[in-house]
Image (tube, rainbow, N blue to C red):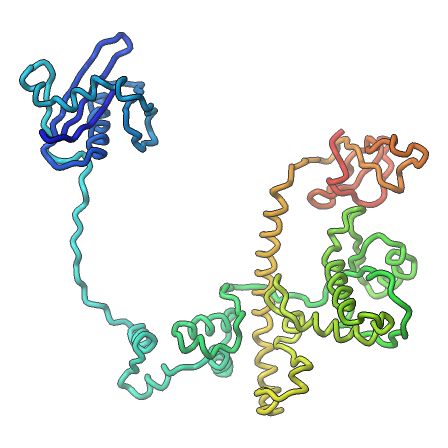
Length: 458
């Protein structure tokens, strides 16, 4: 089918030429009795051509046009104007076609696509229980009733939440809901107590178990200094995670963990990322110590406490809160605030301070839950970036695999000519997704767990 639309001084029209596979031609001319642009005429020609093809029960159709029409459901091919001369001539000569009487002429009164007519209806605003609140927030108008006006007056988020709590009410998202309510106006934003409260609302969340898992790792060789005589920790952990070094896997360490009923886990062999959080913290501590010690490297025990305090009172990007906040429910007073005047020091009251500390503990579970959600979202973003480079290697129990030759298993005499893989081994069990226990072909268990990064299918 060849289609073309045209607009000139005589009016606007469209020409359509249907060609059968046997070479038979069917021509149609349409005259538009409404105002159209040249582009609209092209689309009208296409739409009317499709209607004609539908009436002819055409099953397969290829449309040719010298205009770049935007359509998705058809196979539309652009052709030069000279190859579309018949449809072009019909579109421009619809008046002559009437005189000739050789080609049927159709008069189209209205466009093929009708524009919807809209009518604006003015409706009086409905008065609800929210109307006084909206008028106060938007216009500053208080209700005439003095009691309602007093209850509606401004309160900041913390005082509002504490007032609700003191009245005997509590729900998991109390603090977030109070912040959301006070942020409804510009004035409330100017008096916010906290500037980094997350907006995520929670429904229910189990309280986290603080300090249940410890990660342990060596920080590296340190200069000789005066020994540390005391150490502070919070209870006994449920799990202790470390690498496979003998200093963490000796008889004394195992006996200590057994006596205290501490579960001992090890990072996968040659996959220390499973204990990477401990290494990241150690890296931050070492970097901070380097910047503070300068030439006095032996003074690191004296500076270590300040470095740890700085780390524990600094909000982390992964959780949005500081470790101190997640432990105690409120922010610590930093040393610079102790040595200088501040509003908190000048207006300190021991009794009210203790009451506020107890009240903040009621918000601690919600704060930890929101931090857990932030951490999960952060880990999801990291996973998306990491997964772009992943090519999935699927292994199942019973598969034969080759294991990468590690430095301690490489035959030194072979040098650079040694093999890079050894085996085959059989997958005995799946410890976790991507982590396996192996056995040799004789059924002998291979020590440790092995990551899929160091295995390939045999």
